[in-house]
Amino acid sequence: MVEETKEVKPEETKEETPTESFKDLVERQEKANTEAKELMAKQEELMATQRIHGTTDAGEAGEVKKKEETPKEYKDRVMANDL
Image 1: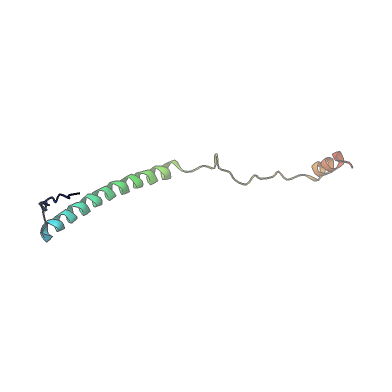
Image 2 (image 1 turned 90 degrees about the vertical axis):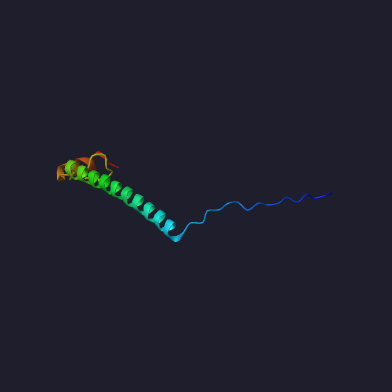
């Protein structure tokens, strides 16, 4: 078999100068800072809304308080379960 050799042309590559890469870095950082500020503003708004509305115990699984038995209720309960 005969292998054909192809001439490989070097692709044109654009090399960035340090100034261009620094400008790109600064632009990306500014964009990230803007996004972070927007997210922080939303979070502050949510926290303020929570503070205004308060919290409730509704729907939370918590400790169920037992009603204290009076001596009479205890006697009646024990007497009902005669062995």
